[in-house]
Image (tube, rainbow, N blue to C red; front, side):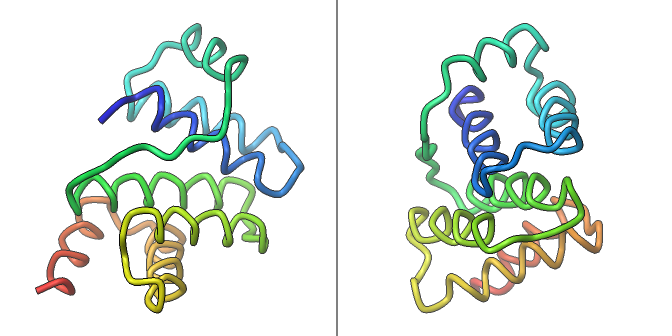
Length: 131
């Protein structure tokens, strides 16, 4: 998984509602450094060179991981607005999930992140639902 592309897609989530809040940026840097292993200097560089990106992911694990991280960004300011929900929905569809299931998948991911369910548990739950 390309860390830069993944990180930039998280940054795009912050931009979705047109308002960048300090809590969102703090959470973005936390995810970047702690979960993706990117230095603060690299993060600064990525933000300056940002564009709209959708990482190419193949496995269900990668897709759920990315959706989970995006949902963390949505919840960084403790509220979910329509623009963020719609962007998350677009990612779900871009990852080849059935469009008819997109809203349910968005609800699932947002709910699990809001309830602080660990990412690996969410991945396992999604795998069980797929079977």
